[in-house]
Each structure stands twice: as structure tokens, then as C-alpha cells.
Image (cartoon, rainbow, N blue to C red; front, top):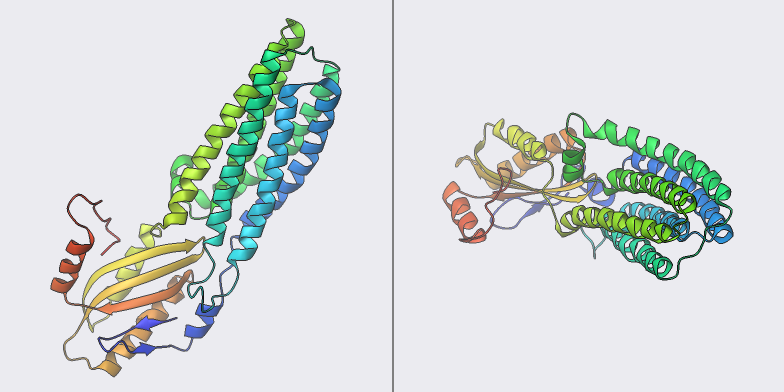
Length: 349
């Protein structure tokens, strides 16, 4: 871990410094299991839906088949993002590859909107313009039942995993604060899949019962709207993480508590945290040290602070410390956040 410690820009490396820079933490094991479960379920579901769509001529079933196929591709991309994010830091990427997961999560949202929603809208418009009587509706119901079982199991797995990480937060609050996109993306996709199955079942029954094949196209449009809305929410959350968000405020508060406890730290001016991955956080500290300290004393103190921070928060992979007076800190913050800019949160300097 690299830590600037003085005005001479001298750099010190503690005993655990190199290990922490070159070892990237693994994503949550529960998230990876959730993605694998969803991948297996979507592979089975997409195959059965395409068979049913070809036999029955159902546009809404075809839309659902495309939906499941896109979800399958999405799971593959998420697993690839997890794999890429585990790469060790190097000269080109000195802070590691943690944000690879955020990039591929955003790509998943784009694919869900462009392919899933786009094809569903196309199928719906074509079927409304040229209605076609549904055939072999019994096969549709059988496939929908099997799909509900497969998707239901995947949804249950993702829901249980998400409940474990959300704690006392509401589901929406947990999504907004999550730093691990697969944890909520798979849940969103599975929920959309179950809703889609219900839409197809209702539309198939109504179209067959009342001889209104146009309802099949309407169902396809509804599925497209649902997928578009789901993709928009996922893209919004991933965009914030991809641009760069602070870590959970409790992390900054905990680090401030650690540094406040050091007798030779005269003042903790501010703590900045930056989330680079689900378990990959960069921290910058602005500290005023006691005037009596010499450069070797500051180096030892910074190494001690670094050790305590990493012991309490293993997800902190890089820690920067900037010696600074409170006046210089306030002046720097004033220049950084100009008039009209967003007011910094409590964890920002």
C-alpha cells in the first residue's frame, strides 16, 4: 500500500504494503453462486420457451424466450466481470481492476434494454399489425409452468442472498447503497422473468378464450415495457458506481475514529473514500500531526494508522495520507467545491 507521508513526497511501505497492492479481494461468494444459479435456470428456460414459441406461434412466448436468452448472456458477462475484477494491480492499473465488474454490469443493463426490450417491442407491433391465432396452447401452459419452477428457484436463491446483505435496510435502500451489482441485478432479472411468465399466461388464456390474438402482441409490448424499466433502474445504479461513489459512510466514520484515537494526530481534517469494487476501497486522509514530530516519527505513525485501518477494514486496499493544517484543508475544500456545486457529504473533506 502506497502512502504519501510528508511534504518531501517521501513514500513508505509497511510490511503488508506490497501484499495488499498486488492481491485483489474476491467478490462475495454468495453473489457468484447466485449468478451461477440464474445461469443454469435461464439456459433451461430459454430452450423450452423457444420450442413452445415455434410450436404455438406465440409472439409473447418468443419475447420471453429472447428475454431468457438475454438473461443467460447477462449472467455470462457478470461472471466474466467478476473474473476480470480479480486481476492483480499492475503499472498500467495501479489501483487494480475492481471497476471491471461495474463496467460489465452496465453492459448487461444496455443489452437488457436493447435486445430484451427491443425485440419484445418489435414482436408486439408485428403481431398486433398481423394477428395470428395461437396453436397448441397446452404446450404454452406446460412450458410456462416449467419456467416458473426454474425461475422461481433462481429467484429464491437471489432473494435469500440479498436478504443476508441488506440487513435492516429496506429493499430499495439496500439497492441504492449496494456496491455489489450482481447482488441485486439477478434479483431484478428473476423478478422480471416471473412477471413476464404471468403476463404470457394471462394473455394466452384471454387470446384463446375470447378469440383476440391481438392480446398476444399486447403482452409482448408489456414485456418490453417491463424489461425497459428494469434495464433503466439497473443502468442508473451501475452508472453511479462506474463514475465513482464513496464507500459506505460507516467506513469513513470508523477510519476517523481510528485516527482520532492517535495521540500524535492533532486533528483529523477529513476522510475521503472511493469505491473501486464490491470489496475494493481507496481511502485518502487529511491529517494535522503534532508539531513535535519529525519525518521518521510521522512515517511510523502513518504505518501504524495504516495497519489499524486495514485490520478493521480488509476491503481498504490503498490508503493515502496528506499532512495538512485545518486552514489549508478548508481552503482546498473551498476551491474544490465551488459555488453552485454539490455540497460534500460528511465523509468527504
